[in-house]
Amino acid sequence: LQRLQNYAGRIILKVPNSSSATEALTTLNWTSLSDRQRQKLFSLSQELLQPRLGKSPPSYLRNLLTKVSAVHHYQTRGAARGHLSVNQVHKEYGKKAISYRLTQLRNSY
Image (tube, rainbow, N blue to C red; front, side, top):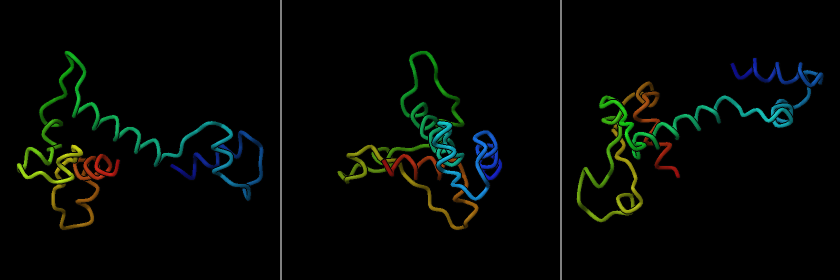
């Protein structure tokens, strides 16, 4: 999909295929798909951790994220910063799970 977006940006701007796709996307004010995916994941984690008044997320989504302070009561830097507890993953495909990706992204900020 990212290739298709790059190609579409070049076609719209009528620039050759050898030109930079990043410059084309920037000129069109388009974000890359990976950046957009990161933004969506971050907003989902924000909604799960701090739901809006009167809008509670479904329990199956709320249970994906656990704060470090809820796991143990030690005064660690992660607990003080509000980090999330990361589930241990044994396989590469486990890193694609939304719970793992949400906690990794959220803890990186």
